[in-house]
Image (cartoon, rainbow, N blue to C red; front, side, top):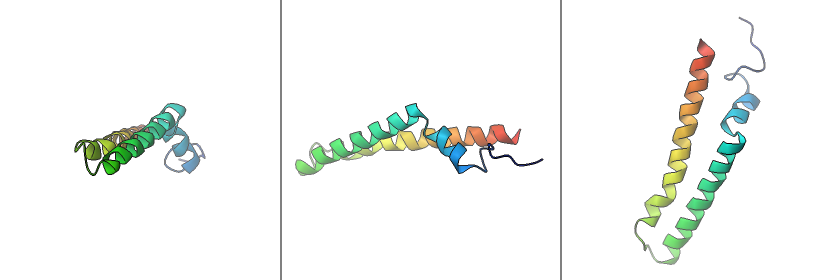
Length: 80
């Protein structure tokens, strides 16, 4: 089978266009803003509220999980 430029595994441009589609890019930027705001609250209040530290990382972890699921789905679909 001949490789084409549009294959998901072989093309970084194609992979980035899928993984950073407009909605996913907006979610990523929102996650980064959430992380920064909660970290600023956590640090400026000397570690209070105690939930703000772990909660700041939650949105990034969810975003990474969604990206890994999306990537595996595209890779699996390309195999068939």
